[in-house]
Image 1 (cartoon, rainbow over the protein chains, first blue to last red):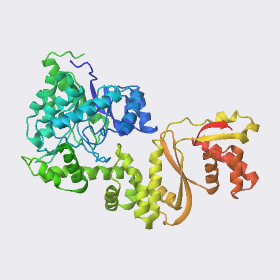
Image 2: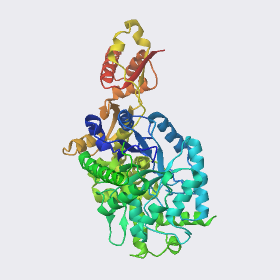
Image 3: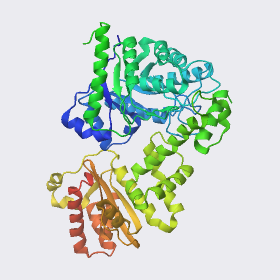
Image 4: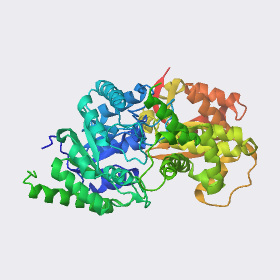
Length: 280
Length: 258
């Protein structure tokens, strides 16, 4: 059993701020995009702090660029640390990827080749980040559309090795596993089965766009049945893991997301019941 | 350079410049073609940045039309690729870009600067707003030496064109004014959770500048009088009204004496 189970959460999006404060929906926790709140003050921070008064929050970054050859951006990390001190998130996460070099940010989650060299590079940097923040972080698996010839191992072995050697946690994105399994033709259950159980602290669920020959991870559509099935398999393996739904485009009104979240909860509860997992 | 770092160079060059060196380093996909897979990254890069510009400058996009705005955005991305952890920060140099590359339509740069200032006001530092009641208790003889600190969200823009009227028409969706040269001032600020912009008369601009510079009430009155825009007697009345309106609009956050 995971000792950091927050329940079932949603991504915090600006269009839902007033509704959340007015109606206090039945959501166990929210995940806030870190970079949206690294500002001096004003509206976004106002809402974040008000919402924090009523809900647990986690911070989810997109610009740590843990795999980049560029030096770690400690100015950015200091801002993250200051924000974290202010809102006391349950944890801080980012992605196992790189987002740019030479000081540029392409604002995309670019894949890393799965080699011993890149494991060492990422592990060293995760340790520096964790030392600086004073806390263990979670790293999320990203969707990918290309594979490097240089890779010498599977993505799941790479992620597991990074988590073990850096002593960090894993944010397992179930949709991203599904997307990459279609794009690179592997069995998504192999991925789940390779994950060290005690390292997995959070699940992401999301929708995507199917382009026939490949899938793009767009976060702009409802979750499809195959991803729900994979989620059920993940719950079977990892039991009680904090789960949240990400929607970044075509964002519907809150009730539509609450209905999807309810579906996640029902799936998890059914699996827990089948496996005699304590539901309290 | 390590093999991994060479791959980063090659992939980033592909995303930014369509350079094809990365192709030989990638596995041929079992379904579909590699070009389509790489296009997911190149398309997403441009789409995300153009979308960020569209979200930051929606009125500019409305004014120029989607196609022109997309062309302008593409040129901007090439000259100012993002160096920021937040994508919204990447958009902030558009006014400078327009000033250089659309100098013949200088009002576009001013319009972008106004839109950007409104956005900045919404994320500027928090500060209390000065309650008019606090001033009511100040003895009249202390007023000349009172200084007022402005709220961090307050900004003043100087225009050479009738940009404020253009912006106002775009916001209200009314007929656009005939665009022409017209020196003017515009104040931008945040009140509670809403950003505001308002045209500023030349006298009000003098008062604003003096308050912003840390001048006390008496010095602000002198600056207004010295500007030649009002008589000595009118200057004090004008500044008092300016203060009253400013307190109502939450322009001031603190009062202190020299």
